[in-house]
Length: 389
Image (cartoon, rainbow, N blue to C red; front, side, top):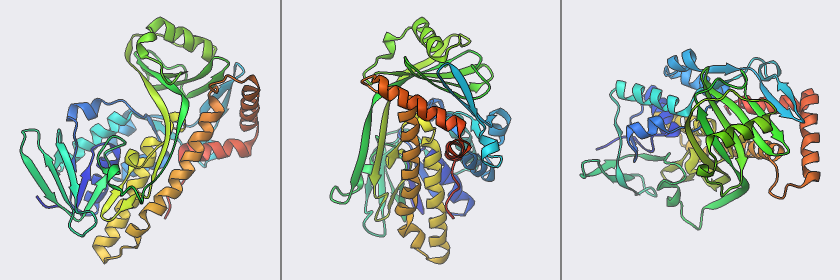
């Protein structure tokens, strides 16, 4: 096989990149090691920035998003038993967020790609990327029926996540890794229950952090701060609901749990994002703690930059966008890392449960909620800073 861009990974980064390239008349092939059923059911992020929604709309894949997504023009910060609304739209000139699960975005993108007859291979294995230091990269893999396959291409986009093969292809002597393991995790549940509020609720209590969100008018997504070694099996339903009630300061509507799991909290950046003809995007290059709701949105920002750079290269032979790809993306990556770390530190109890630190956190939250300037800073970051031109 032959294509212009080989995309390894069919998560949001890879699928959005494929859609952006198709809109620009650039051929691509997408490879995914999981099954279609798996990637379409994998519950991950659910908050879409305004820019992400706008981009999906431009690509023509947001019909269901606009019908079923929940638009939120504010969020609530709750501490000291009192809720304080941050008016996102009012503070940002009408920009908002939309609650729409990552798996739903993936379903829409897969349906559009297959509907256009574009190549998308699931359940591939033994993926090997070769020749990225030259001008004729090759991707080899084994298809689901066991046959060896080869794809010749101009460029490889590594969109295969933290556990994929592409991020390891950066030579060790060139790669710089920055990471932080946070001393807590999130116990998350998906429940068949009405949401606590019509907007997201971020809560800091003396028992720890809690977050109340939604996926639909009848499905809630809720989180509790837990130790990093917590086991979801040690949290039966009644314990989860009781703890949520104590932290939120109100009894959330209860219902049967559809899913539960523990998510570790990690900050990670691998630099640079390019080596030869290989370009990393999304979780293959960086991970942010989920407090700021930025993972999916940051992946979309990466591939937007990459698609524009590839278009200039193929159209005019101009490689400046490709040469600047890593630096351009990293400016946003580190800005998002700052915001996500700030939100995480401000809203979670430290591992040592230091009462002095808690009082400082409460003072900081009080300032954010009483200062229009501070609230605007939070709002601008939360709805998504503008893309670089």
